Length: 417
Ligand SMILES: NC(=O)c1ccc[n+]([C@@H]2O[C@H](COP(=O)([O-])OP(=O)(O)OC[C@H]3O[C@@H](n4cnc5c(N)ncnc54)[C@H](OP(=O)(O)O)[C@@H]3O)[C@@H](O)[C@H]2O)c1
Image (cartoon, rainbow, N blue to C red):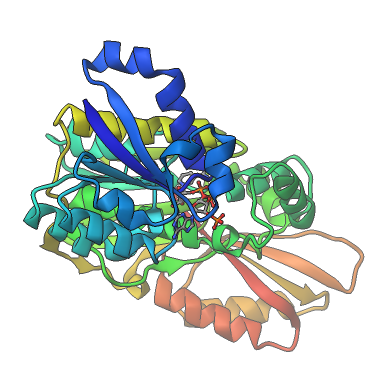
């Protein structure tokens, strides 16, 4: 019998309570282990009452940590603090910890894993990336015999939903509103739409896949500058725009970035629609593998939280995580093809001015299109050959300063995966 303490009775915590109750017999039959919810904690007692577990409620998390019967603490409150403190205190009290908290693992993972190792307890966090997709297990266990060298992830359901709806014809604002109405986006969506959520998840995945400590910030661009016309131009060129989290390990250097990316329409990731998540791995032996599924939601996510609890109960968890210091590639030195869309005054010589700037910054153009819209301000779409990031950023800065350029140039990197 494994006795657990659950902290946080919100979306995920309430799902954990339901699964432990409804699937109790199934879990015992499948695992040979009984899991008992010994105590729960939340800021609001009413949540425990609504779940029919008022009798095991406590408002102070320390009551759970001080209970000698409890061997595993489940933290599903989210955020940095007090989640970090609770996790560290739980570990020091010799409790195993299960968390779904990407923020705390991305920022404080090293401290937490070290504490777990020192105290000989497990820390499990499958639900922190990709909701119910067992990507942590795939990297840590199933593919442990391979060297993963590339990760391409659609790690945020909100932005994937918005981009899918924009492909279907909605504007960014309409798609965001729809996502909010359906509960896929927060009232303040910036954490998702600015790419920060994906960046936290990418840090966790790349740390595990490359066995690396990643402390620095990574290049993170969101989707707010993409408009319907970019989606259409991409489609005409045979591409789909996705908010892609990209990690590569090349010659002991790690390249990490999150940004809207044009990928070929024929690629498996291009068909990941709506709020779904997917992670595409490339390894020396496995070649390519893609995991796909619901990246959020109470019951899907709570299922893998309970899966972590079961792993601990069966003593099949892993304690030592990433350890090596590895060099993060200077983002200015990466090279890729780019899509550019400056909106310019429709008059002779404008394209020549832009082409001149590109040429002077070592950028060669592979394709250009300018639609005749009969308006004063028109978009020019430009596709480049492989270009160094620093050259491109310098050129874009110079293009944006031209009087004839009327709004900031939209820049989308192209990955021919
Ligand atoms: N929702 C998803 O689909 C999903 C998917 C994957 C991972 N996750 C992760 O799972 C975690 C939980 O997410 P969630 O959606 O379940 O959040 P949530 O619905 O906001 O639930 C969090 C619960 O914890 C309570 N809480 C906050 N601070 C507390 C404290 N100091 N002590 C005790 N209880 C406290 C909250 O109470 P108040 O509401 O009163 O603050 C709330 O009831 C997060 O780390 C999130 O990133 C969520």
